[in-house]
Length: 476
Image (cartoon, rainbow, N blue to C red; front, side, top):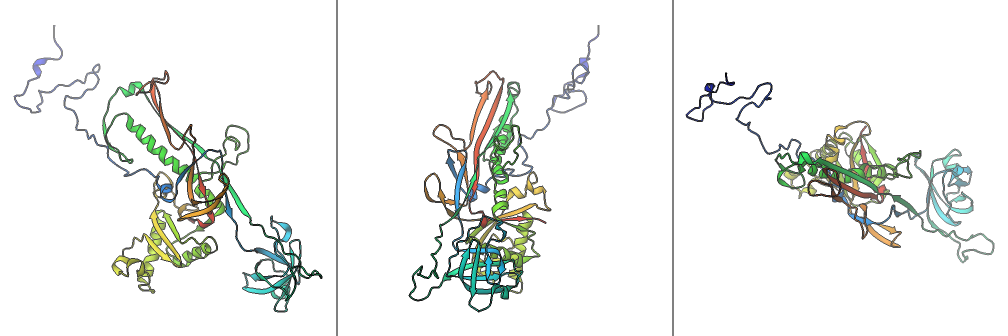
């Protein structure tokens, strides 16, 4: 009888030295391939290959979070104070139609004896006069110059703007005299625009079965949420939580209203969607296409002039992708070192050394202050950072501070940040950020499922107030 293997072929060594005849090898067909008794050198610490991978934090910087109890949040915003009409035309020599063709829901609130300015932006022509008659949307205007409207602007003029700057009455006349020359004034009720948004339900889940929980494998980690040390199977749960927290912000930035009216589970009645930041600015705000360093101050000043026609909020924040941030730096650096000399040094205590630090984080132009920062969401390759081209979103200008709106629930004017999050909550259930364990493993004994389920849920929406003060930068 012979023995296999021949144990005499294994000769112990007197020292801890690897030799050809002093180690065990199990590599037979039946024994698998357990290579050797010496274990490989394993790094326990996980390599942070991509640095901090989380993307959230934008909304925490610019807004606040407040609870709500309804399926919808409704707010009202001011309209303009003064009376003005665009795109008017001239039906006759002395008349102007403030709503030609009744193409829009526009009410004529100009009174007889109001003094008006009529302008044609395309030519720079203008005339001033007094309203002597009003019928529907057509006003009869006598110009102070003695000319007629068609005499100044031409019979085909159709791009006129009219606004009221005051009124004029004869001495000693009543508001409505006996001859009817002075007609009763139109009472102008303040109007407002009403907007609404619906919360979206966001869910996520991580599942691990009971058998895998018994196979212990420790990994040393330093996670983005500040946790450090050793994690077992719950490392994946930790990353699921981090990913879900990013979704809470990404869903409110990218959200869209659902316009699918067809049948099925995903029609608008069952899944209304939610209006995100980008959608709100596209719909009610300002979009700037193709801002580059080459355009310089000319393009940026055009943005400022547009802001002048809106709320003119003094302090604003710029959240930009890398290339657009560099374009702003190049624009500012060219001012400091260009023909304008040291005019930009004032922001840097008149220090040339400070001004030549080309990573500008804040600057002032005209009557506006701007604070610039990179927005990681626009730089990360797993989100919008991989896209740089036509219609790519390259940054956003967000006004700082608060706005005054009328709260339908409280019945009063309140101040709110321009951007803020509303989440569903009541005394019985707070859905701001819920997490719970189910299953029959990992400490949860709620079902016969031999696994641990980590569940995450939130219900929230973004309120973008006064979107006319926001600017969305897009590529070409």
